[in-house]
Image 1: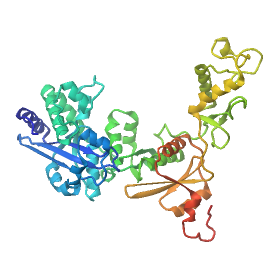
Image 2: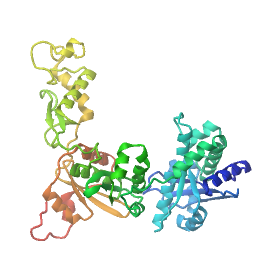
Image 3: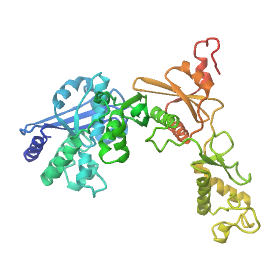
Image 4: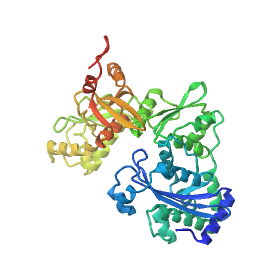
Length: 488
């Protein structure tokens, strides 16, 4: 499926302007998970400044079962994949074709990440420069809301035969870029140069540090003068995320401050994003980095405490742990907790007196006078019915009870790593790659209830992320403890 002579001529001219031969690439994968999924098809259309064109494509044996949804979308039959070469068998031929070229793809970050991951499994690096036509579309058509390949095909009425096959989609990307260049060459060249321009390395940071960043999940810590902690962040792709800070340094104040002040960078690789989320939340609370805002607040949180139907009015209490009856929500102050109750009252017709927001004097509450209360304050509604409606209104704010009798160990694996998180009453007590360290973490029991960590853990439990096991059961599998070692 070669490109037309007119398209090749346009792209060859663009390659000359960019001083780089082009490689239009597309991948089909078993899914979108970088660690778990594999490539099943690769295509590349090569165009040089001299106007030479080469088309290359191959199915790839993924070494795993093909999802029926992907099979239906692409039309690729599992029997075809069973006879296809593995990535290792085509890696050298592919590298020869792509080396020294500017890779062009739609959502280039994702395609490049999957290629790098496959080469990493072979113990090899794959340095490459990429141009993203998704970003070009957003730059050239800011008035449009959709920029996916299907939207571009519909907008420009491009030939969509073979959609969701690698070679057909690579050809669509090439035709789209040629169309852009023909209609708005100057704008395309500016946008391409902006994408290719690597941000200047911060003057206080060793460039080799940035080059050593892995393209894996983890947490990164940015330090300034005197080893002052400036910022803690997490990402599923550390290299990409850290560079994003410096790309944005010319347009965002916080990123500019970070680029100006950073002197040292550390990172911790994690098996998956879950560990990165837990580490980020814990480190920010413990170490209070200057430029973090969203997760920094640790003290002074409040919750709505209410023991249930016909148990009296809700109370506003400090949120220190979730072991004291039923708690709802997490608020920066007692005032905000009360305001949340007032909003629920207006939305659900609840009584301000029954909620404890007005004194229990005779007569209807103020909301009843405005016809916003259904009358629990003046006998028009029973307290039982009112409290049943209150329970329904509060349900989405409920902090779930710890579902086990003792501490649990959340174990997750990925990228050749295994990490054990010790969790008790939704409190993250710490983590270690060695089970032998868990008794010490349990003995110290350092940490307070934190709403961010609660949400991360509760979400992980609901989504079946990692393996949850009782601490006591895991410790029973360890060799006998030495004298003086705490076990429970």
